[in-house]
Length: 248
Image (cartoon, rainbow, N blue to C red; front, side, top):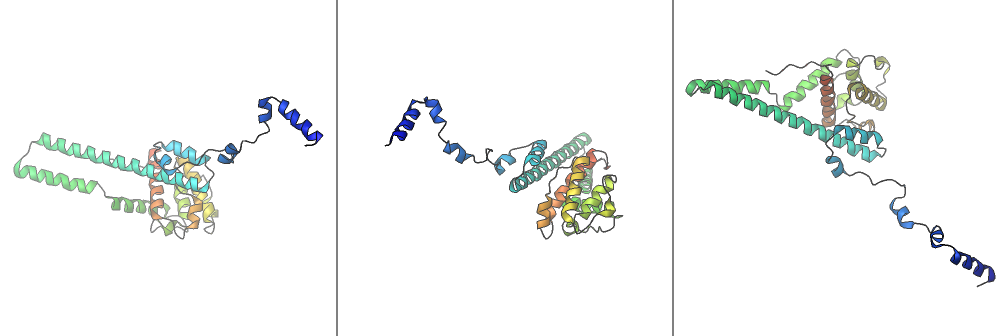
């Protein structure tokens, strides 16, 4: 070993221990977190979130495409669970009311049978099944967008593929938000983005659909479109922009 090398080694050995450690590179930390960020969220963690606002904030902050898609799916599942719970609670209340009515009447025999048959018939008439709800919502969309040029809603899939139907439906309730007449059906991504942003800002409707996902599809998934329209309708009802018939 030459004189200069010995001199350098001597200086290093004389340095305090803490100072010498600054020359070392913490390989394990850098390898475990190359970008300094936290691990990506999992679908199990998203499924455990029961607050819609939390998922909306996560969606706003997410930048990764796959992560945003997972959050949107979690939002759709959460809203579906809430709707199912409301329907279950409504059905339980109706059942309780029917039982209370039978108990107060105290009828037996033929009169009681006639009364129960009448109540069952009324229940089946006033409680629409899922198929009827879907058709009613489709008819509502068609009626609201009928005055708009370039919109012909026949289903929850191909009729929405260029984004114009979404824009027409949103514009019907928020006519000052944008100029409908200048929209281009050949720019579906811009149309999707405009409709979803406006619905979120003015109606508080969660952005359950991703424009990038929609433009990749030949036709939108009808279940996704149906879920989004349900959520938009619910938000309009909450704000008093859509009047619903009160149940008897």
